[in-house]
Each structure stands twice: as structure tokens, then as C-alpha cells.
Image (cartoon, rainbow, N blue to C red; front, side, top):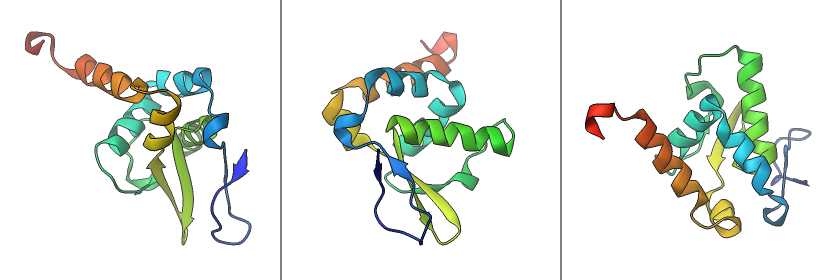
Length: 119
């Protein structure tokens, strides 16, 4: 893993370089419904979002774990902006490593959320 871009002293977070992102780790990260919901929200916009804006049905420590899994698998990039930990989807890196994977997973997740009568 390589450190992220320089931020607050001592607060850089490790992220895998593009070539270090592994398919099985990405699939593992996206297999959890909470993490998939986070990724879906990030994919819906082009902005960074603070961890605190996500309404997740788990404790703070479990939420922290989910964000760490996403970061360490290479799905998201996290950086500190002041005291907030900001999250961004690493779409370009994922698309370069696994073309079409992210779009297929997000489309399947949208399909799963649709009521059966709408399908």
C-alpha cells in the first residue's frame, strides 16, 4: 500500500496503488449491503462525502470498519479535510483494472432494490 496524498501531519491513510487492487478484495468489499450502499451513494455524485453523512444501520465502530474495508480494497479513497474524513469513489482506478465491473455491480444493486412489480 502507498500513502495517500499529503494531508494533516500523521493523518495520511494507506491506499493500494491502482496496480495493487485485487479483484477478490473488491468483490468482498462490495458483497456487504452496508458497503454497497456507501458505494452506490458515492457513485451517484462526483463529490467527496464525509463519513458522517452516510446513514448506516450499524454502530460507529462497525461503520469505521466498513469504510476501512472499502479503502483497503481500493474501492474508495479517504482523506482528512480538517477533522472530517472525506470519501471518494476510485472509479477511474476500478474501471482501469476491471472494466465494467463497477457499473455491473451498481446496476445489479439498483435492480435488486426495485419492487418486483416494477421489474
